[in-house]
Length: 386
Image (cartoon, rainbow, N blue to C red; front, side):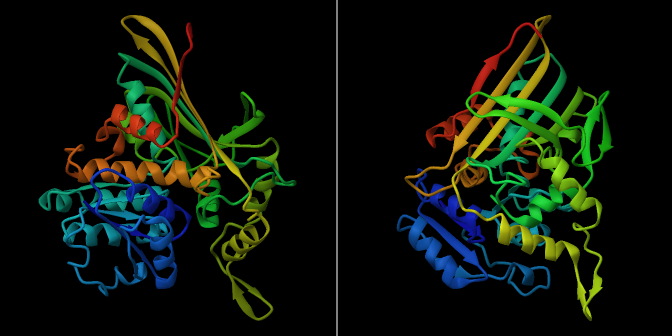
C-alpha cells in the first residue's frame, strides 16, 4: 500500500511515523511546500519507506497541479491548513485515491460533502475530520451508542495540556494557533431536545477532574463534534462537546477574543494594514511554544437504555508524550487516528464509498484495538445506576 502525507509539520510527522510501521505499507511519501523539511521528515520518521517532495497546496485550487498527480497512491492524508481540503479532496478523487484530513472547520467539511457523488463515481472514500476531536471521539462514541436501544445524552470532553502548566494561561501550543483560535471563535453546534442548537464558544464553564491530574475546567468550543449533531439529530436528546483546560484559562482567554483579537478585519497601525488574528497567532506561537511534555485527556459519557435498563458508560483516555519517539501526546492522539483510518480503508476494511462521516463508516472495535497497539488505551467504565 502506498500513501501520501501532505504537510511536514508535527501532525504530518506522526502520521508518517505510524504508517511507515503499519502492516502491508510499502511507501509513505511526504509532501510540503518546504521540500527540505519534507525530506528531513521522510528520513527521520519514514523507516526507509519514505521520500520528501515539494508540494504547494495553495496551487491546487488554481489548477496548478495536474489531476493525476496522486495517481498510484491508495490514500492521501491531509495535515495542512483546513482551507485547502476541498480542493485537495477533488485532486485525490481525480487520482483515484481515498482522502482523509484533520479538518476542524464545519463550513469546510460542508463543502467536502458536496463532492459525495463525485467520490462514489471514482469508487473512493473521503472522510473529513479524522484527528482527535473531531475524529477519534466520534468513533468511540459511535461504538458506545450502538450498544444502546435509546440514547439520552452524549457528552464529549477533550483537552491537550502541558504536563507542567505555565501561568497565566496554563497552556502551551500543541497544534496550530489558527486551529486554536478557530475553536474558541466559531459558533458551537450542540443537540438539545434532539435538535441542533447554536451556542456561544467559551461558555458554559464546568468543573471536572481526572485521577492523578486534579481539578480542571471545560467549556464549549467549535468543531469538535464534526458531523455528530447531524448524524444523531432526532436520535439523541442531548449532545455536546467541551474543551478541557486548567482552571481559570477561559476567564483569561475569552476577553482577548471579545475585544477583537480573533478578527480577520484589518486595522491601520502605523501606516500599515494589520489583521488582529494574524498578530494574535504570532504572539501565541512566540510566547506559548514551550515545547515541554504534554498530555491529552478524553472523556466520552453516554447515557441511555438497553433492554429496558438505564445505562451510563464512560470512556477515558489519558495519554502522555512518548519520550522514546519524541512524539507528543497531541501528535499521537491526532495523527494515529487518521493513519489508522487511512490504513483500514486502503486495506479494504472500510467498505463505504463517497464522502461519509466516520461514525458511520469506521468499525469502532477494530479502530480502538489498533489504537491500543500504539499505546493509546481507551478505558471503559460502566457507571450504574445513572
